[in-house]
Image 1 (cartoon, rainbow, N blue to C red):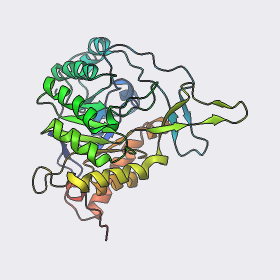
Image 2: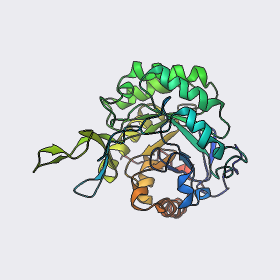
Image 3: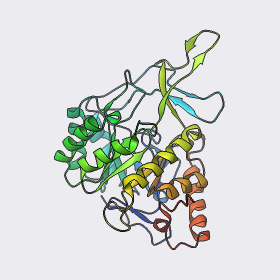
Image 4: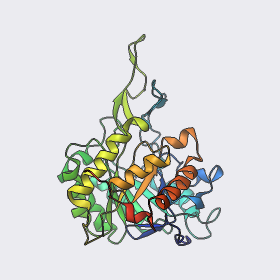
Length: 330
């Protein structure tokens, strides 16, 4: 992949060996399948883009309604159902855009390929294709999607989650790997430790994902989402996600690989402004994902980048990395 190196600015950071200009990442499923967002946002001004979650076979996803704002306006309900073109069509129609000189030209920022599935074999199959693809900087394993029928349960069990990670590591041994977990997973630190140990070096976490939710039309007594249940995202879950990042970082992520070498974490959940992003950084995140905010303002990441830059300088730090995990509980 031909991507200019991260700048020497205070926001430049490294995520499991992947150089980012800044820590702001467009989250999976919220910026199109791959390159669609470049029509509304200069992608050279964000840290990275995560693809839509890709499965072995194409999926149409759930029927409408499958995305709705919450009544209070502080969140979004979705039950997209992992709609995606499947790995074959993705490689044929989208990946050329990621690599050098293909399609409309190379993407101007690192790309993280998101993988989803319904079996260990599904995850391994897509990850194997991603590991061989030119243009992908890392892989994210979506082990916590609550908006398909019966949900995916891998991320709720340390042994099951670790089994998926080991299978993916076998086919993608040198690829930076991020495991996406629910911010409300029971004992998330135990699950996090299991998957990071299974993945070994260059393995990190994305914390978190949407959380299971249900909304009802009280007049018709019917669910508002066609799938009945779905996932809640946005500011409504931000504090829970920050708490999970802090718990994992402090339980075992701090200095995991030696003094000052923290486990890489992407904090994700309800970031709409720079203060939300700064909370994740202080809790222990190396980078920050944005998703729901993009539906309201596709250019909102630019404001977050500007705000973080000023905040780091006000804190008297020479780089963002100096502030990772520096929450002062006392």
